[in-house]
Image (cartoon, rainbow over all chains, first blue to last red; front, side, top):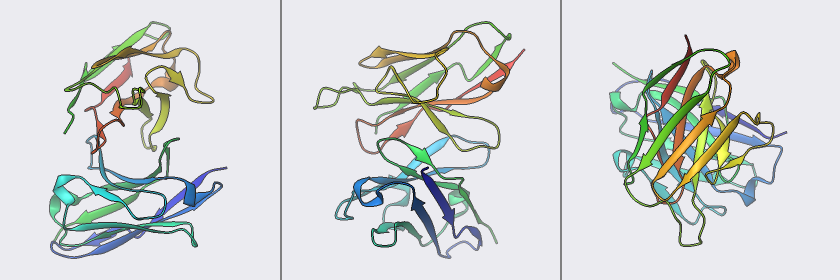
Length: 114
Length: 112
């Protein structure tokens, strides 16, 4: 069974940093592109970042470029999202998702507030 | 970026009646490999999204056959042939052809 378990969310002040993790199991992690998708409270879905199978190619949505960094450790079956210079508008549930099949984790809530 | 426009925003439906959601893209979703990467997701209240349909009209495993997808180019539709209580929630189209991947704004299906 495919499992994606996000962690690392929490309350952070504007300008602060957080690192999200997504532990994957039940499939060959190194074979899949992975994504981070966020959902602000009561709002729709936004894909903020993607990474290819070996981590050599990444992509970012414009509002997070230069502030967020996606990475992966295929030996640990784990996806990461380093979030710096956080803003109030980054407040959202962050989901990791497996490409191709689009399985999703349960999400982790990031709240940016003073 | 490709803009995905869904309608309606809200869809009150009587149990057992059909429902239809429209999704239009600002540019063609036909990929250079010939595929059209248009997905539909369901998000029940308090849950993570779940994919229902991929590449326009292919149902994911375990998805009831009352769900169907159709369309081409820039114009797509999700249909529920007979709405059941478990279908309540938000539905999103998503294009996977162009980066960044983009979602429609969502359609909330509720029971009248």
